[in-house]
Length: 422
Image (cartoon, rainbow, N blue to C red; front, side):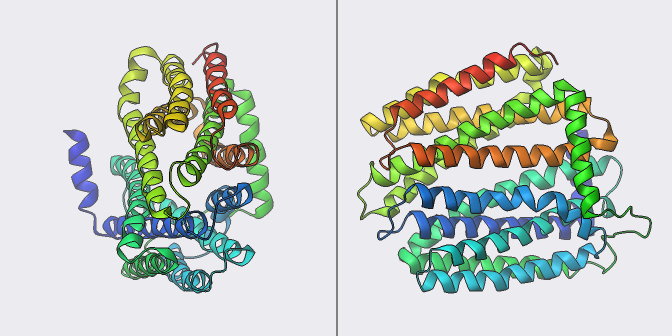
C-alpha cells in the first residue's frame, strides 16, 4: 500500500510528469530508430546479413552507451539540464532527418553508421540529464520511487518502440520506404520530447551553484577509483563479472537467432517474415527478463543472492543449448523462444541481484563510479559476444559447436559463482 501511495504521490508532481514524459517519448523514439536501422541493414531483400554487417550494426547500437555515458556528467554539471533536454531532443530529430535521407538513398555503409552513432551518442546526454534532474523535481522517499519507475518504464517504451516499428514498417509497405516512415515517426517523437522539456522552467533541473564540477581527467580518475573499489570488495566485483559473462552469451545468442531466422528459417526474398519471427524471439527474451525482475527480490530473500543467481544461471545452460539445437534442426520457433526466455530470465535475475550487492557493498561516495564501470562492462561484453559469434558462426546460423560453447560458458560461469559468498 505504501508503494502504491508513493507512486501516486510522485505522479502528482507536475515537473516530474514532464521529466517522465520526456523520457517516455525519447526512449520510444530510440526504439523506433533502432528498429528502422535493423530492418534497413539486416532485414531487406537485397541485403543478406554477414558477419561484418551484423557486428557493425549491433556495435553502433550499444557502444555509445558505453563510451559517452561516463563523460556526459562533465557537461551536464556545466549546462542547464532543462536546455540539454530541449535542444538535445530537437538535435536528435534533425540528425534523424539525415539518417532518413541516407536510408532513402540506400546508403548502408560508413556514412549511415557514423550518423546513427552520433544520434545515439546525443541520446546518452539526454538519459544522463534525465537521471541528474530527478532530485530537482522529487525528494525523500519519492526519489526512490522515481528512480525505480523511470528507467524501467523508459526501457519498456524503448522495447515497445522497437516492436511497433516493425508493425509500422509493415503497414507502410515494408522495404526501405517503410524504414523511412518509421524514422519519420521517430523524428516526431523526439520533437514531442523536446517540446515537453520546454514546459519546464529554465533553472528547474539544475545544476545548482554548489554543484561539484568535474573534468575529463577527473572522470578517468573516478573510473580508476571505481575499479579499486571492485577489487577491494570482491563480492561486488564477482557480481559485476557474472553479469558481464552472461551478457557475452546473450550477445552470441542474439547473433545466432538473427542469422538462423534470416538466412535459414525463412527464404531470402521474405525478410518481413524473418523480421516478425526475430521480434518474437526478442519479445520472449524480454518476457523472461521481466519474470526475472519480478521474482528475484523475493527469491534472494529466501535463499540468498549467490544461490539464487546460480540457480537462475544454471537453468539457462541446458535450455539455451537444447533450444538452439532443436530450433536449428527442426525449424522450431517455439524452441528458439524457450531459449530466449531462459537466457533473458538468467540475465535479469543476475543483474537485479548484482545491483543490490553492489549497492550493499560499495560506499555511497563511490557508487556512481562503480555503476559507470558496470554499465561499460555489460555493454562491452554484449558487443564482444556479438562480434565473436558473428565472425565464427556460419551465415546460416546453424552452429552446433557454438550452441554447445554458449551452454558450457553459462554452466562454467554458474559453477564458478557458486563458490562465492555474499
